[in-house]
Amino acid sequence: MIEVQDLTKTFNGKPVLNGISFHVKKGEIFGYLGPNGAGKTTTMKILLGLLKPESGSALVFGEALGDNGDLRRRVGVLLENAGLYERLSAYENLNYYAQLYHASHIDERIKNLLDFVGLSDRQNDRVGEFSKGMKRRLALARSIIHDPDVLFYDEPSAGLDPEAQKLVRDLILHLAREKGRTIFLNSHDLDEVQRVCSKIAIVQKGEVKAYDTIENLRKKSSRPAVEIVLADDKEAEKALDLLKSLDYVSECERDGLRITAIVEGEKTSTILGVLMKDGIRVEEAKKVAKVLEEIYLTIVRQSEGKT
Amino acid sequence: MSSVKMTLVVARKEMKTIIRNKGLLFAGLWLGGMFGVLNVLLGGQVFSFNNTIFSVAMLVGVFVGSSFSSFVFLREKREKIIETLLCTPLSLKSVWFGKVLGATVLAYLFSLLTVALVTIVSNIMLHSLVFPSVAILIHILAVVPVFIASTIGSLGFCQFLLGMRENRIIGYLIILILFPFMYPHIFGGLIQGNMNVAVSWVEVAVCLIVSVFLLSLTTHLSRYLSKEKIVTSTP
Image 1 (cartoon, rainbow over the protein chains, first blue to last red):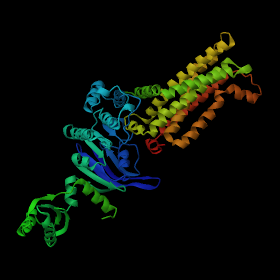
Image 2 (image 1 turned 90 degrees about the vertical axis):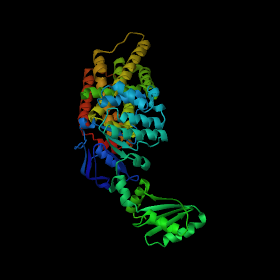
Image 3 (image 1 turned 120 degrees about the horizontal axis):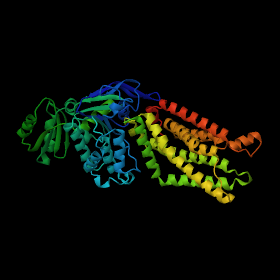
């Protein structure tokens, strides 16, 4: 559905994208992550035909969007700017874009979408009077006014309250799972990406540093860790020394009653057995998997040469 | 939907947003009123009703049109709303033409209002019934809208293509170049050494040719507008 191959782009001689490649299948929610200035928005703008690549290709439906009106009709966007006219009402904004996209059953569709984003009672109010969150919700409605097959979202939850963030997540999941839409999600919100994306790419300095499903990245980037919560603070130092003495424990950290140990090839039960044999009482023990934030930071820091 | 219909959708939207901008409307009314009445009052001994109508119709249209142009082109570009618009199936040429059309229709209305005002004030001042000549009527009905459209078209083209600083310079330059065509009797009189020159079919025809040429040129050049240039030259 979306295919990017060896994409390069420079601005004023400075490389912004340096051989980016990835693909997104139909019905996938693809998270495109990276620090500011990494080239995320540039990639999206090339895919949307707003910028031209130096070399390589950026295809949607197997073609470059360019000025192809028929293909553009199948794409919905929500960019950094909501793309709304402050002097027009919510209804007029949606109606304008619906006409530009040749949407059908416009009135009914606008009514349903305003209902969905919780703005039906404000449909005749000027958008200039709306809060940032309301504008973002209206922009979300605008992005799907023509029922597109592919959606490009740039920071869709930016500036939204938790309730509206949930609405965004629900909408994205609904569009992908129930309607089979493909979603390209450019985001800084790692929690959101973790909750909705099936696959991600982490881009930095114009290069893709990681590209896989979140689960696979988790497996690749994290070593097995065990988190142990002790019952008694007095036993913590003894437990820490004991764990450090084990050959298969490479790292061990203590934070109050909580000890986190990186174990090589051994099971949690083995560690527990050792502690209990020495009379150390354990309240809780569990394997910990890295969350996306840790994976992201590890990859970004590694590529920056930091530890 | 044909590209003509799409262009009309854009034009209608532009008109709606301009009409809802009270500041812009007030500035237009003030400009029309000021230019209209001042031209009559300051005309003095050399006041010619037809000459005044000829110039004021274009002057008001061009100045009001240039402020509308900044609103529909530059502001949308500065606020990056244009990026979303460029993602729609609309061609860049339709976007440009729709904006030109919307701004021109309203600027022309201001021009007509000023002409009406000048006619009323002149009739009161001269204590007799005066009406524009046939040449001036044709000028008002056929040349002025094309002249306004060509000015807004060229300004809009530059505003899409260039950054803020370049646009200020180009904006002044375009109006400066067009100025002699708005006051041909004065410029012509200066050259001939006779300030009592009356505008005739010749001046009307010259203005029409210049407007059509400029409009055709910018329409042709609009083919070479690129989305990348618009997106990356954001003021």
